[in-house]
Image (cartoon, rainbow, N blue to C red):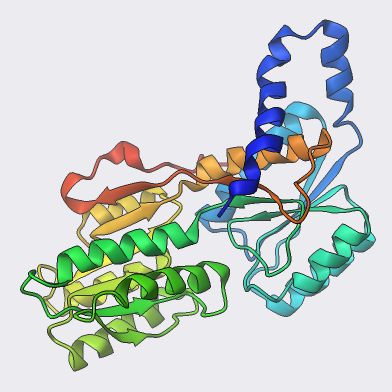
Length: 329
């Protein structure tokens, strides 16, 4: 994944890095590239650290470079999200930033926007429809690495049952689709691993708690829980603690690495966490917007792509600086 980033992004970043060597006239000319440009960000919902962190990074670039930036919040309403996106196309911005709730919901609208000359930057969750650019996590890598860690902890020679519960957010969300595929590909090579549950929580911590509590009742020898997003996995981790199984069941999660998550890692609610750092993703999204406005184009049939670096945060080696804080507004 993300091989198409190489040439166009490197050239664009090199341009930015050499800006300090440009003449005053050249810098003024570069600044004029952004004047009058408009960006509309359409998140699944604001008020969560992921989207707030991304928006902060893009808004900072808008203020620094003089382009217009607007957020149109879908507030977890998928019907409203489609309507908001359609209205954004009619308003003819230069770029729409899309946070896809599923692989299919916005596919037709992304295609329509691109055909009308509006560039689309997809952030963290991809649609089935390619667009000009994508910034986000490599979900296949995360799914594979988590699965390999689970095999090491629960598989042959571990003395454990090999039983695993998976809790996606939504089964049709890009992250869940790709992580499930990668995870299962690893588990298929290890028949001692048994997935006893693969139920979506709809991103809700309470629903994840209930799913986990039920799984533990049915499988008291459960070895691991893999939640696809840290926030709802807090519910799963609390169910494990409430059942008195914190020393027996490993709780895995992934997410943007904010302070709330780190507090729960430190408290032993989550054991191992793959962080793609939402604050850094916001910075990368802001840089990508600038490159798109400068005229960066993807290779034929591909997208401009920036893969988010990963760090693995573990309860036993936790460091406070591994997470980030969203500044107060």
